[in-house]
Image 1 (cartoon, rainbow, N blue to C red):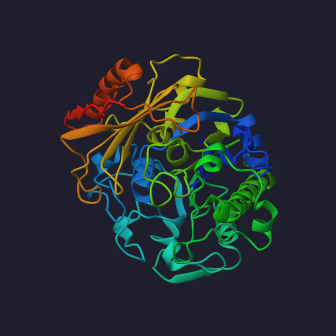
Image 2 (cartoon, rainbow, N blue to C red; image 1 turned 30 degrees about the vertical axis):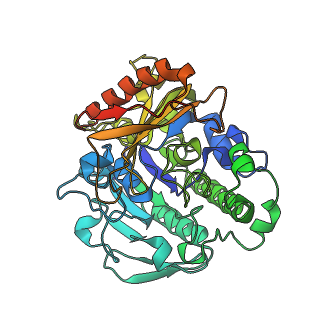
Image 3 (cartoon, rainbow, N blue to C red; image 1 turned 90 degrees about the vertical axis):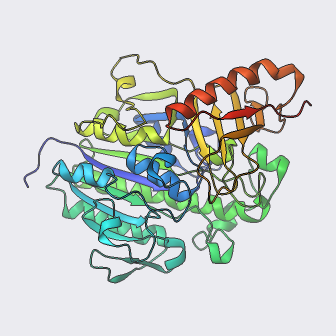
Length: 435
């Protein structure tokens, strides 16, 4: 296929990366100069959130533009419904060369069968990368399910493979999805193994306010976590350098985002699966094509909005069934009625729901339901209410407080409306005990 004027696309997805790991969100450690430059020169979704703070469900939302309860992937290990179209299908049908490199987490086995690969042609991935590999042993599988070991630190091995894909497809319009495991913990170690020497640079230094107050395992893990973030940002710089060397910068859209954040066992007994900012707020920016010079978006953006945004930027019709919406109208001077809250579905640790507005966080849970077995519930109880302007670290839960009953009632109505709009049956939400 001859090269056309259509833009290329690279999705750079990290795993479990907090928004405040970046300089543009106040991190003082200098971890992300490449992301910060991309956000400053491109389009920075300043208020970006996952719609499902756990790996597999979040990835299903990003690939489909549908909520996890719609795809059926509301917990890890679930597989999308047969025939469910994903980004790989849409771009491939539009004539793009499509590639997937890294962690998948939307299949039920490794190697991933062809029918569970989301329509991607080039394949160099593992379903559970944290199980098939280690920080200095990156084992993935190719299109024929042959095992492939990529040399170097895992971030670097995947980045090398991505640069080879870009070079090989530079004459074609391509769509590459590059999915890292970092800065997620290495499960069998219960640790955050940064590259050699990186943890020592950041151990015992700056700590976000919520972790400073609540502790968890942050003191033990944060140095390695910051070191992994640093190496990811260096990988982003390498990708951008490769595009520049191939004269592809102007015609290639890069989307940087993460599937969810990390609270370091401060909100439950693991690292995510809660409605708190540390779990749901993620760094997100786009650069290239229509996104260059787009500035900072202050609207509340959800992970579910990114699939329609990519399709829209490629000139591919956005399916009416998609439950997110494209960001492009915000950049084109139009003023669509943009939602004033993001909606979050929470599974596994609980059957929970939440909305996040510019000021408020309101969350409910279904105490009699199993978050691994039940995708939704007919009754919930108010669990959290935070005033994010007065309490950005979410240390003072106002659920049940007499002073905030009116705002809780208003937010309950907004949450119920979002649940119904997402295709859920309208439930009963019972008030929190009076504080």
